[in-house]
Length: 355
Image 1 (spheres, rainbow, N blue to C red):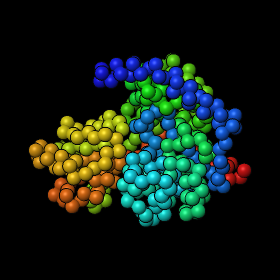
Image 2 (spheres, one colour):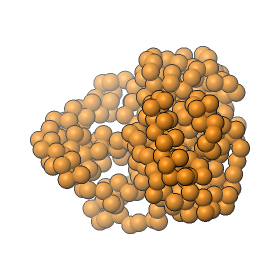
Image 3 (cartoon, rainbow, N blue to C red):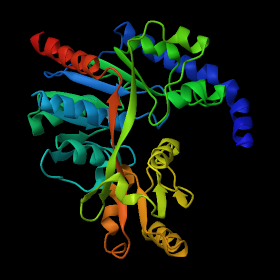
Image 4 (cartoon, helix red, strand yellow):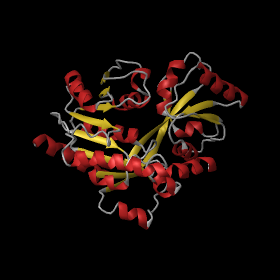
Protein backbone atom coordinates (compact mmCIF):
# COMPACT_ATOMS: atom_id res chain seq x y z
CA UNK A 1 0.00 0.00 0.00
CA UNK A 2 2.88 2.34 0.79
CA UNK A 3 4.39 1.57 -2.63
CA UNK A 4 1.08 2.44 -4.31
CA UNK A 5 0.86 5.73 -2.42
CA UNK A 6 4.43 6.51 -3.44
CA UNK A 7 3.52 5.89 -7.06
CA UNK A 8 0.56 8.24 -6.72
CA UNK A 9 2.94 10.98 -5.54
CA UNK A 10 5.25 10.38 -8.53
CA UNK A 11 2.33 10.61 -10.96
CA UNK A 12 1.13 13.93 -9.54
CA UNK A 13 3.10 15.81 -12.23
CA UNK A 14 0.61 14.47 -14.81
CA UNK A 15 -2.47 15.65 -12.93
CA UNK A 16 -2.53 19.20 -14.43
CA UNK A 17 -2.41 17.81 -17.97
CA UNK A 18 -5.27 15.38 -17.33
CA UNK A 19 -7.29 18.10 -15.61
CA UNK A 20 -6.67 20.53 -18.48
CA UNK A 21 -7.99 18.01 -21.01
CA UNK A 22 -11.10 17.34 -18.90
CA UNK A 23 -11.77 21.06 -18.38
CA UNK A 24 -11.40 21.88 -22.09
CA UNK A 25 -13.84 19.13 -23.03
CA UNK A 26 -16.38 20.28 -20.43
CA UNK A 27 -15.97 23.90 -21.55
CA UNK A 28 -16.78 22.93 -25.14
CA UNK A 29 -19.94 21.13 -24.00
CA UNK A 30 -20.95 23.95 -21.65
CA UNK A 31 -20.64 26.51 -24.45
CA UNK A 32 -22.50 24.35 -26.95
CA UNK A 33 -19.47 23.90 -29.21
CA UNK A 34 -19.83 20.17 -28.65
CA UNK A 35 -23.51 19.33 -29.16
CA UNK A 36 -25.71 17.10 -27.07
CA UNK A 37 -28.28 15.02 -28.96
CA UNK A 38 -31.78 14.69 -27.48
CA UNK A 39 -34.10 11.71 -27.88
CA UNK A 40 -37.89 11.75 -27.69
CA UNK A 41 -38.19 10.21 -24.20
CA UNK A 42 -37.03 11.51 -20.79
CA UNK A 43 -33.49 10.47 -19.87
CA UNK A 44 -32.03 10.08 -16.37
CA UNK A 45 -28.27 9.73 -16.03
CA UNK A 46 -26.64 7.92 -13.09
CA UNK A 47 -22.91 8.49 -12.73
CA UNK A 48 -20.01 9.36 -10.49
CA UNK A 49 -16.80 11.36 -10.31
CA UNK A 50 -14.80 8.51 -8.80
CA UNK A 51 -13.42 5.31 -10.27
CA UNK A 52 -15.50 2.27 -9.29
CA UNK A 53 -17.35 1.17 -6.19
CA UNK A 54 -19.73 4.09 -5.62
CA UNK A 55 -23.04 2.22 -5.86
CA UNK A 56 -24.19 3.12 -9.38
CA UNK A 57 -25.72 -0.31 -10.02
CA UNK A 58 -27.92 -0.38 -6.86
CA UNK A 59 -28.95 3.21 -7.67
CA UNK A 60 -29.81 2.31 -11.26
CA UNK A 61 -31.88 -0.60 -9.93
CA UNK A 62 -33.64 1.66 -7.41
CA UNK A 63 -34.54 4.31 -10.00
CA UNK A 64 -35.62 1.77 -12.61
CA UNK A 65 -37.94 0.04 -10.14
CA UNK A 66 -39.32 3.42 -9.04
CA UNK A 67 -40.09 4.43 -12.63
CA UNK A 68 -41.55 1.02 -13.42
CA UNK A 69 -43.90 1.07 -10.42
CA UNK A 70 -44.95 4.64 -11.34
CA UNK A 71 -45.90 3.79 -14.92
CA UNK A 72 -42.96 5.37 -16.76
CA UNK A 73 -42.03 2.16 -18.64
CA UNK A 74 -38.25 2.53 -18.22
CA UNK A 75 -35.37 0.90 -20.03
CA UNK A 76 -31.70 0.81 -19.03
CA UNK A 77 -28.84 1.73 -21.32
CA UNK A 78 -25.28 0.99 -20.18
CA UNK A 79 -21.81 0.84 -21.65
CA UNK A 80 -21.54 -2.83 -20.71
CA UNK A 81 -18.15 -2.62 -19.05
CA UNK A 82 -16.12 -5.85 -19.02
CA UNK A 83 -18.02 -7.55 -21.86
CA UNK A 84 -16.30 -9.47 -24.64
CA UNK A 85 -18.22 -7.68 -27.40
CA UNK A 86 -18.36 -4.17 -28.85
CA UNK A 87 -21.07 -1.96 -30.26
CA UNK A 88 -24.81 -1.99 -29.64
CA UNK A 89 -26.46 -5.08 -28.13
CA UNK A 90 -30.10 -5.45 -27.14
CA UNK A 91 -29.70 -7.32 -23.84
CA UNK A 92 -33.28 -7.97 -22.69
CA UNK A 93 -36.85 -7.22 -23.69
CA UNK A 94 -37.79 -7.05 -20.02
CA UNK A 95 -38.95 -10.66 -19.89
CA UNK A 96 -36.18 -12.66 -21.54
CA UNK A 97 -32.41 -12.30 -21.79
CA UNK A 98 -31.40 -12.14 -25.43
CA UNK A 99 -27.64 -12.48 -24.90
CA UNK A 100 -25.27 -14.16 -22.45
CA UNK A 101 -23.68 -12.26 -19.56
CA UNK A 102 -20.25 -12.37 -21.24
CA UNK A 103 -21.71 -10.49 -24.22
CA UNK A 104 -23.20 -7.61 -22.26
CA UNK A 105 -21.45 -7.33 -18.88
CA UNK A 106 -22.22 -8.40 -15.32
CA UNK A 107 -23.73 -5.13 -14.05
CA UNK A 108 -26.44 -4.84 -16.72
CA UNK A 109 -27.28 -8.53 -16.25
CA UNK A 110 -27.66 -8.04 -12.51
CA UNK A 111 -29.80 -4.94 -13.06
CA UNK A 112 -32.19 -6.69 -15.42
CA UNK A 113 -32.58 -9.61 -13.00
CA UNK A 114 -33.58 -7.15 -10.28
CA UNK A 115 -35.87 -4.93 -12.40
CA UNK A 116 -37.23 -7.02 -15.29
CA UNK A 117 -37.10 -4.05 -17.68
CA UNK A 118 -35.71 -3.78 -21.23
CA UNK A 119 -31.97 -3.12 -21.40
CA UNK A 120 -29.21 -2.52 -23.93
CA UNK A 121 -25.50 -1.77 -23.98
CA UNK A 122 -23.48 0.50 -26.25
CA UNK A 123 -20.29 2.52 -25.80
CA UNK A 124 -21.76 5.35 -27.90
CA UNK A 125 -24.79 6.45 -25.91
CA UNK A 126 -26.50 8.43 -28.70
CA UNK A 127 -26.32 5.52 -31.12
CA UNK A 128 -27.35 3.16 -28.33
CA UNK A 129 -30.37 5.25 -27.28
CA UNK A 130 -31.69 5.57 -30.83
CA UNK A 131 -31.42 1.83 -31.53
CA UNK A 132 -32.74 0.96 -28.07
CA UNK A 133 -35.90 3.01 -28.64
CA UNK A 134 -36.44 1.26 -31.96
CA UNK A 135 -36.10 -2.16 -30.33
CA UNK A 136 -37.89 -1.72 -27.03
CA UNK A 137 -40.63 0.96 -27.15
CA UNK A 138 -39.65 2.18 -23.67
CA UNK A 139 -41.02 5.52 -22.44
CA UNK A 140 -37.95 6.60 -20.42
CA UNK A 141 -34.26 5.71 -20.31
CA UNK A 142 -31.97 5.29 -17.31
CA UNK A 143 -28.34 5.77 -18.34
CA UNK A 144 -25.94 3.77 -16.18
CA UNK A 145 -22.46 5.26 -15.62
CA UNK A 146 -23.00 8.22 -17.92
CA UNK A 147 -22.02 11.44 -16.12
CA UNK A 148 -18.95 11.84 -18.39
CA UNK A 149 -20.82 10.67 -21.53
CA UNK A 150 -22.26 14.06 -22.37
CA UNK A 151 -23.13 13.53 -26.04
CA UNK A 152 -26.64 12.30 -25.15
CA UNK A 153 -28.86 15.00 -23.66
CA UNK A 154 -30.41 14.09 -20.34
CA UNK A 155 -33.27 15.56 -18.30
CA UNK A 156 -31.80 14.68 -14.92
CA UNK A 157 -28.17 14.15 -13.91
CA UNK A 158 -27.58 12.18 -10.70
CA UNK A 159 -24.13 11.93 -9.17
CA UNK A 160 -23.23 9.41 -6.47
CA UNK A 161 -20.24 9.40 -4.08
CA UNK A 162 -19.23 6.62 -1.67
CA UNK A 163 -19.11 8.18 1.80
CA UNK A 164 -15.95 6.18 2.61
CA UNK A 165 -14.11 7.88 -0.25
CA UNK A 166 -15.01 11.31 1.13
CA UNK A 167 -14.22 10.75 4.81
CA UNK A 168 -11.78 7.84 5.14
CA UNK A 169 -9.60 7.52 2.05
CA UNK A 170 -6.08 8.92 1.64
CA UNK A 171 -6.56 12.58 0.55
CA UNK A 172 -4.33 11.87 -2.48
CA UNK A 173 -7.16 9.76 -3.85
CA UNK A 174 -9.42 12.79 -3.93
CA UNK A 175 -7.27 14.22 -6.71
CA UNK A 176 -8.00 13.47 -10.36
CA UNK A 177 -6.34 10.69 -12.31
CA UNK A 178 -3.65 9.44 -12.55
CA UNK A 179 -2.70 10.28 -8.94
CA UNK A 180 -6.19 10.21 -7.48
CA UNK A 181 -9.37 8.23 -8.12
CA UNK A 182 -11.44 11.06 -9.55
CA UNK A 183 -12.45 11.23 -13.19
CA UNK A 184 -13.23 14.94 -12.84
CA UNK A 185 -12.70 17.58 -10.18
CA UNK A 186 -15.32 18.48 -7.58
CA UNK A 187 -16.35 21.59 -9.52
CA UNK A 188 -18.04 19.28 -12.06
CA UNK A 189 -20.75 18.70 -9.44
CA UNK A 190 -22.40 21.87 -10.78
CA UNK A 191 -23.71 19.74 -13.68
CA UNK A 192 -25.55 17.42 -11.29
CA UNK A 193 -29.20 17.98 -10.38
CA UNK A 194 -28.91 15.55 -7.45
CA UNK A 195 -25.84 14.46 -5.47
CA UNK A 196 -26.02 11.28 -3.41
CA UNK A 197 -23.60 10.37 -0.64
CA UNK A 198 -23.81 6.61 -0.30
CA UNK A 199 -22.86 5.43 3.18
CA UNK A 200 -23.62 1.81 2.23
CA UNK A 201 -23.47 -0.22 5.49
CA UNK A 202 -21.68 2.45 7.52
CA UNK A 203 -23.02 5.03 9.94
CA UNK A 204 -23.50 8.56 8.65
CA UNK A 205 -20.36 10.67 9.07
CA UNK A 206 -19.88 14.41 8.83
CA UNK A 207 -17.81 15.84 6.01
CA UNK A 208 -14.80 18.00 6.78
CA UNK A 209 -15.20 21.76 6.47
CA UNK A 210 -13.07 21.66 3.31
CA UNK A 211 -15.32 19.07 1.67
CA UNK A 212 -18.48 20.82 2.86
CA UNK A 213 -17.41 23.88 0.91
CA UNK A 214 -17.38 21.81 -2.28
CA UNK A 215 -20.90 20.49 -1.63
CA UNK A 216 -22.42 23.79 -0.50
CA UNK A 217 -24.72 24.30 -3.52
CA UNK A 218 -25.50 20.62 -4.10
CA UNK A 219 -28.93 19.04 -3.71
CA UNK A 220 -27.71 16.25 -1.39
CA UNK A 221 -29.34 12.98 -0.34
CA UNK A 222 -27.85 10.23 1.80
CA UNK A 223 -28.36 6.60 0.80
CA UNK A 224 -27.57 3.32 2.51
CA UNK A 225 -27.91 -0.43 1.95
CA UNK A 226 -30.32 -2.80 3.63
CA UNK A 227 -29.67 -6.55 3.72
CA UNK A 228 -32.72 -8.48 2.50
CA UNK A 229 -31.49 -12.07 2.71
CA UNK A 230 -29.65 -14.66 0.66
CA UNK A 231 -30.54 -16.16 -2.74
CA UNK A 232 -29.45 -19.62 -3.89
CA UNK A 233 -27.57 -19.12 -7.17
CA UNK A 234 -28.70 -22.45 -8.60
CA UNK A 235 -32.37 -22.48 -7.57
CA UNK A 236 -33.21 -18.77 -6.92
CA UNK A 237 -34.64 -19.85 -3.56
CA UNK A 238 -34.75 -17.10 -0.94
CA UNK A 239 -33.35 -17.57 2.59
CA UNK A 240 -33.69 -15.41 5.69
CA UNK A 241 -30.62 -13.90 7.31
CA UNK A 242 -31.29 -15.99 10.41
CA UNK A 243 -30.87 -19.18 8.35
CA UNK A 244 -27.13 -18.45 8.19
CA UNK A 245 -26.49 -17.73 11.87
CA UNK A 246 -23.67 -19.92 13.14
CA UNK A 247 -22.72 -21.20 9.69
CA UNK A 248 -19.17 -21.23 8.42
CA UNK A 249 -19.06 -19.70 4.95
CA UNK A 250 -16.49 -18.93 2.28
CA UNK A 251 -16.85 -15.36 1.01
CA UNK A 252 -16.11 -14.72 -2.69
CA UNK A 253 -15.96 -11.24 -4.19
CA UNK A 254 -14.98 -9.74 -7.53
CA UNK A 255 -16.14 -6.14 -7.14
CA UNK A 256 -14.30 -2.80 -7.14
CA UNK A 257 -14.49 -2.18 -3.40
CA UNK A 258 -15.33 -5.27 -1.32
CA UNK A 259 -15.17 -3.34 1.97
CA UNK A 260 -18.92 -2.61 2.07
CA UNK A 261 -19.84 -6.17 1.02
CA UNK A 262 -17.74 -7.61 3.84
CA UNK A 263 -19.14 -5.03 6.27
CA UNK A 264 -22.71 -5.98 5.29
CA UNK A 265 -22.01 -9.66 5.94
CA UNK A 266 -20.34 -8.89 9.28
CA UNK A 267 -23.37 -6.80 10.31
CA UNK A 268 -25.59 -9.88 9.94
CA UNK A 269 -23.11 -12.06 11.88
CA UNK A 270 -21.47 -13.82 8.93
CA UNK A 271 -17.87 -14.85 9.55
CA UNK A 272 -15.80 -13.31 6.71
CA UNK A 273 -12.40 -14.63 7.79
CA UNK A 274 -12.29 -17.25 5.00
CA UNK A 275 -12.50 -15.30 1.77
CA UNK A 276 -11.24 -15.00 -1.81
CA UNK A 277 -11.06 -11.48 -3.20
CA UNK A 278 -10.75 -11.15 -6.98
CA UNK A 279 -10.35 -8.05 -9.15
CA UNK A 280 -13.41 -6.06 -10.24
CA UNK A 281 -15.48 -7.59 -13.09
CA UNK A 282 -13.68 -10.91 -12.60
CA UNK A 283 -14.18 -13.20 -15.57
CA UNK A 284 -14.63 -16.54 -13.81
CA UNK A 285 -13.18 -19.70 -15.34
CA UNK A 286 -12.79 -23.28 -14.18
CA UNK A 287 -9.53 -22.21 -12.52
CA UNK A 288 -11.34 -19.85 -10.12
CA UNK A 289 -14.13 -22.36 -9.54
CA UNK A 290 -11.54 -24.95 -8.51
CA UNK A 291 -9.94 -22.37 -6.21
CA UNK A 292 -13.31 -21.82 -4.53
CA UNK A 293 -13.92 -25.58 -4.22
CA UNK A 294 -10.46 -26.13 -2.73
CA UNK A 295 -10.93 -23.53 0.02
CA UNK A 296 -14.49 -24.73 0.68
CA UNK A 297 -13.37 -28.27 1.47
CA UNK A 298 -10.16 -27.24 3.22
CA UNK A 299 -12.12 -25.14 5.72
CA UNK A 300 -15.04 -27.57 6.04
CA UNK A 301 -17.42 -24.71 5.24
CA UNK A 302 -21.21 -24.92 5.09
CA UNK A 303 -21.66 -22.58 2.15
CA UNK A 304 -20.20 -20.02 -0.25
CA UNK A 305 -21.51 -16.46 -0.18
CA UNK A 306 -20.87 -13.98 -2.99
CA UNK A 307 -22.29 -10.78 -4.49
CA UNK A 308 -25.12 -10.61 -7.01
CA UNK A 309 -22.68 -9.14 -9.53
CA UNK A 310 -20.46 -12.23 -9.18
CA UNK A 311 -23.44 -14.59 -9.04
CA UNK A 312 -24.58 -13.81 -12.59
CA UNK A 313 -21.22 -15.15 -13.84
CA UNK A 314 -20.80 -18.03 -11.40
CA UNK A 315 -24.28 -19.37 -12.23
CA UNK A 316 -23.01 -20.97 -15.43
CA UNK A 317 -20.79 -23.24 -13.29
CA UNK A 318 -23.76 -24.78 -11.50
CA UNK A 319 -22.74 -28.25 -12.65
CA UNK A 320 -19.21 -27.83 -11.26
CA UNK A 321 -20.67 -26.47 -8.01
CA UNK A 322 -23.52 -28.96 -7.68
CA UNK A 323 -22.14 -30.32 -4.40
CA UNK A 324 -21.65 -26.85 -2.88
CA UNK A 325 -24.35 -24.56 -1.49
CA UNK A 326 -23.66 -21.11 -2.99
CA UNK A 327 -25.68 -17.96 -2.37
CA UNK A 328 -25.52 -14.26 -3.08
CA UNK A 329 -26.28 -11.47 -0.64
CA UNK A 330 -29.44 -9.64 -1.66
CA UNK A 331 -29.47 -5.96 -0.75
CA UNK A 332 -31.52 -2.92 -1.63
CA UNK A 333 -30.71 0.76 -1.59
CA UNK A 334 -32.65 3.05 0.72
CA UNK A 335 -32.69 6.83 1.29
CA UNK A 336 -32.86 8.88 4.46
CA UNK A 337 -35.42 11.20 2.81
CA UNK A 338 -36.94 8.58 0.54
CA UNK A 339 -40.28 10.26 -0.24
CA UNK A 340 -38.56 13.54 -1.05
CA UNK A 341 -36.05 11.79 -3.30
CA UNK A 342 -38.75 9.76 -5.09
CA UNK A 343 -40.93 12.82 -5.66
CA UNK A 344 -38.00 14.75 -7.11
CA UNK A 345 -37.25 11.97 -9.60
CA UNK A 346 -40.88 11.53 -10.66
CA UNK A 347 -41.64 15.25 -10.90
CA UNK A 348 -38.57 15.74 -13.10
CA UNK A 349 -39.82 13.08 -15.50
CA UNK A 350 -43.34 14.51 -15.53
CA UNK A 351 -41.95 17.93 -16.36
CA UNK A 352 -39.81 16.44 -19.13
CA UNK A 353 -42.83 14.68 -20.67
CA UNK A 354 -44.89 17.86 -20.58
CA UNK A 355 -42.13 19.87 -22.25
